Length: 438
Ligand SMILES: Cc1ncc(COP(=O)(O)O)c(C=O)c1O
View (cartoon, protein in one colour):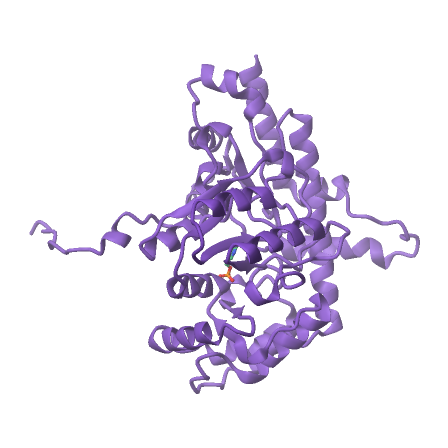
């Protein structure tokens, strides 16, 4: 019998939604690998390290926790998150205004659902903000940032965009350090943006999912320092604690936004009810400020630094433009210097470029257009995590166990020896550029 399609009527906000670009490239790259093709997987931003054994043990020990937890989250966990953020970031988070969710992605979606007003998004920015806003029946207001500012939103750019919207409430979502660029905002940049936000009635959703992966040498500065009353913080365990699959994130509201808390509690109670109880108990371990756990996060961050700086150096050597990363595990090189040569080969957009690089050279990258950046800029997002996290972590400790290692730094040699896919991928991009040069 031939299959007949049922004439289903679909929600117009959802019908054109594609699968998230990062998840889609992950499937493609894995499929190619399964078929025996060598691939440098620079497309997917998942921390490669194991979840620390202390957290795994806490999870196992709490497998019996089977009761539904309060909608906002386990009260002890909200308390632990508040204490942790005081200790490591000097934030004053009110534990009664923290809501735990199955990943910060869901919490960003829920708060976007609740808040009215235009949503301003610096471009390039994370792929999921746009579709989430579309699901809410709105379009994002992109603010195109400049490479010369390491693609960081400047106060004047925010002020200029605010002018378009007059007096009413606006929302800005800003991820710091940034996916896709690895850029980290300075104290002054955060201060200046805060002033503009306060003047223009802008609520900031501060996506700090990578804030512990900071290798700039400067202290992390968040909007809480200069604009606590207007800042909604989201974060979680996915990146710093390499626990993306645990689906454990949170959102913290400032004093004065109790009405938002009430709406979100109701939304949660009518949608996912509460995050899995064993996971919340395991998260308590992660947020207890344990020394071993913090040392682990720091060591993993050193590896992210080495990999980011290695690829940055390689990209500059091959004539790409690329701001130096200071956090997270991404780079945003652009092939603008090769524009004419690419055009001559019929490659007119960064989407076409990423297709050629995958098909002909086995390098999986995401086009800048997935991050709302103009296609003819030839920007691409590179994730620097294509290695065996467990083995690389062990290798990173070995020199520390020897007596003569006072000046030991994880450098290029370490990356080439232990993360061979990063070297291979960079070699492939260089080979492609040589080919179009000739
Ligand atoms: C910028 C950014 N924000 C938020 C998230 C969501 O993380 P999670 O839902 O795992 O907490 C991600 C994950 O890729 C991300 O890159």
